[in-house]
Length: 321
Image (tube, rainbow, N blue to C red):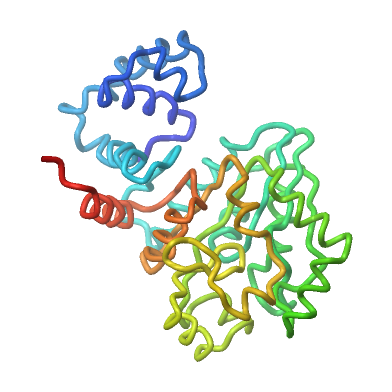
């Protein structure tokens, strides 16, 4: 099974010390922990066999790959759900792991930004209950029509309920009919205040959305299939918190994005911990775009897409002489 969130620092400390050759004080600085904690983690790593990779290849394959991905992609932490042929829907394992990771990342007093979609709602639905103090969960983008499943307000409030936290919803639609109307609504004091406060979040949770016929933006009626196809031809690569991004992770210059009520990408990038969870292999390119745009610091994925990411990173890495 994959490494548990509580063991992340142990494995990361061992990786930096043994694989990268950092001194204990350097490991402590990079992980923002004490040197005494580093010594304790390294001892636990030896006792549990984490550092004995040569005799534990099968057990720690996914965890070693996670460390390699962190190095290759410049991410703070990666968790990989192992392949499990006995599970009818492998994405369930990813959601279970993501829920555990999310709870591990949340601290008392945190302000958490939450997006929407099937992945986020699945995480919320299976998340354990936790009674955290002074936690606030805020919606990162406007809302969708009532018939649509996995709405932003549903995701926000369910996570708030699981954490016994305060939930703050957007009282605005995700997308407006005209650019002028969207601009005027963003200028309203209540909406402006909520959008400006997103950069003060400590943690964000979202997935990377696709830009095909199966996209939530198409299914919810925000865009038609032909409109989405036209945006793909203009460089659309993925969706983050309701906004369409290009392959470099920047907002695509299009009328749709100018009609959206959502946190600016600069506000998302200002959030220290940006957790992306991807269940489907079809979201490989959207995930690449999000990583390229600095929209991800923490990542939960399955083993197959992890291998694709590592192969991609190593193919693009400069050759050493």
